Image (cartoon, rainbow, N blue to C red):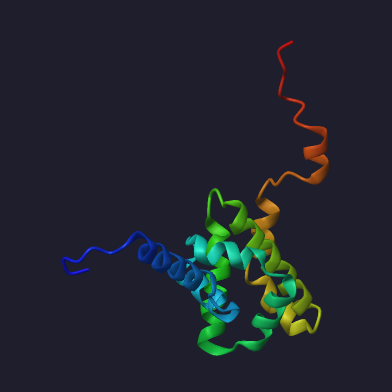
Length: 143
């Protein structure tokens, strides 16, 4: 700092504090950051780990600009050619939350369909648990 030597133990403490700050993004903030930082691991990883109940709660609670910001964040992966596992998990959980909300009224059902997440998930050729257990029959092993 300004020409003075900083000890290694101080550097380690500063790094640890920075890491703790990154890890402590409030749940509400994660959903709001998704549109702006939807490819940042600091947002993706904790958001993908949240339970579906949090998605439902946040989607039902927010209105107006915040809701539109979240909607933009969730739907940004609809056109992604190769979504990574975190993107897919977020889409799955958002879709599950939206399906729960859709059951509450016909109006909600119609609104949810416009998001396009269910359609995008249907187009992804995701391996199922059964596929993983059987293995790929097209792969040939040399004996």
